[in-house]
Length: 439
Image (tube, rainbow, N blue to C red):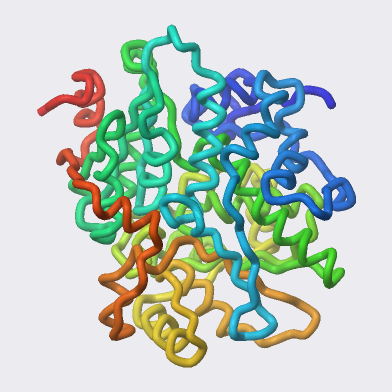
């Protein structure tokens, strides 16, 4: 296999190797790295008895071919993807739930964060200056990144989250690491956090003073491994039923949805892909035919999807060759408001015994609107464990939700977060001061 080159979505940066793209996070021109092409794979190339890590190693091999990380890919997959992503029937018998919350922080972000950490650990020179990983989070990404990089030598992590816009348990997780992981509670929205991270990554003089990288889904090291659970579930379903698996994907920043689309484009047996959004209208309006218009995010019950300017939209457009008509033909996006979301959570818990997180419930609400077809099977990625959203779910359901052991252990630790203004310069000052007071 020839080596793959990685290009910026904005087309004004030199081509990079995969290792260079992962280490940098963001391209020098502010764009997002994409492969020069999406490779094609035959489903027959995969071991029918292989686990998730084995599927990932086969799926990602063309992306790693000829790269400094190529030889280590099977070990990276085994190390990072060591917990299952089970596909189980929903109470609605023609649908499935893809459970992605069995990792150490009870959210799907664990897969990508652990993979990125395993890659960077192999790329870092012990004698190099310390690397600072910046991550903007709307709830779950930060905890996954914190857990993946906690106590790694020569690396520190700065987690930016919107103060008051994540659940109390999410906020506690974010501040529970200490050591080389610092939580920063920003007086603004997730989009503010994302803007601050991008501004820091794009400032060359700052990068020379403080080497930086990103652990958001703008990082290829986060995005590529997310393809593995879609491939694994679709291949398992294909071998049994000989039909493709359709997906309804809860989305805010578009990373998880993009991973599914790339997996389908590579030849995996995935059928229709629909996006489930909360009340933030950017994506539903675009897919309904209006111009793409980023705007400030609004707070909803599905807080981790409160995104008004999804970063991965650049990659989505690249995937469809900047043809918005083709993009709109390829999928659609449904908007679920908070009253519908609450009613869906209550109905599925009461009628079917299905307790899910609010984000997963946006996809359930979309599923409820669709007619049942015997010739197709919808699957919903369950993005986080419902116990992380007790303030939404427990008053609605009228009973406590059992907390999984890994999450309970994190909640029992002390937690702290440093306040920060929602200003680009505030983060830059903090970085230049070595993580100390900057105002």
